[in-house]
Length: 372
Ligand code: SF4
Image 1: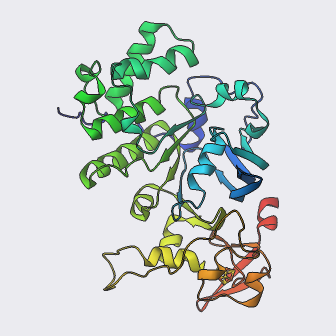
Image 2 (image 1 turned 90 degrees about the horizontal axis):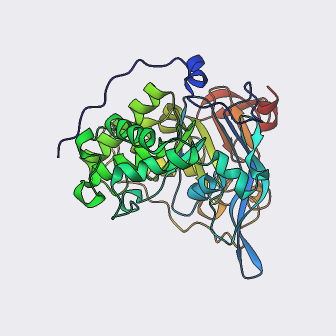
């Protein structure tokens, strides 16, 4: 079972990316609006008579053709954030505040029926362990053709042809298109899931741990595939993983979440070379690095808080080496620095100048940032 090389395509400039769309923008879209703006998103899960605050005030943006990585420990809210965006939450999950604006359209206000216009056509998702989610008794080509046929109202023949083209694009030979899932390797099944995510030509693809179940060689191939698709198709990617090396290779920016909130966000190089938030420092320090003489990895002592009754103030305070009295009482405001990083931590004052590790950086509140 050989996998074909991905055909080379001309890279698109950012200005071309919206023009590449095969389908018109949604009716209510503002063509000049940012691709995606998530503001103060609050998604909670009902547990008995209480609410688990899984995502509690998360904000971020995504530009055309950009790749954003979301990192953090298990249960920090990464997947819940993604599921909120496409409104595929479990029955006890509810978006209790904030907005998810796609082309200026707030998806949070949409009904389930209306969301069907946006799901897969505008935002698609490769789920955790997705390669095992293919229907074992339906040919791979037909599984990919189905959303094309029904969501885009394409005739059966055209949908099948597009499915074969998509499989070819992700490196699965055309002659393998009528295989059943069990006839493909794990790497090929994951490629097929990526082809399925691309079926309706979405603007955004969310990959939730898309390489976790794969060995390192196949993982590298899948990451290479995602990178090439992004470059060649002008896709915008959101990659969710606890594996920082995946984000370092693939993303432009990284959002670090802790206990349902954003701890730090910024350009990938800054996050990995000069992390500011104590949690990000621990997270980066706990990851092997070939370029340092570090002999042992740092351990983040303690456990994340119970989000049924999260601590007031900074949720990282019980595990933080730098915790101060204010940290246990006041939620740290977000501070933005001139190198594009924003941090929510009381170590960084919201005054005009913040001193960090001996270097002086300009800072302003997130409120200031959003006005610019
Ligand atoms: Fe640590 Fe305080 Fe910063 Fe939280 S706000 S990370 S407890 S220093």
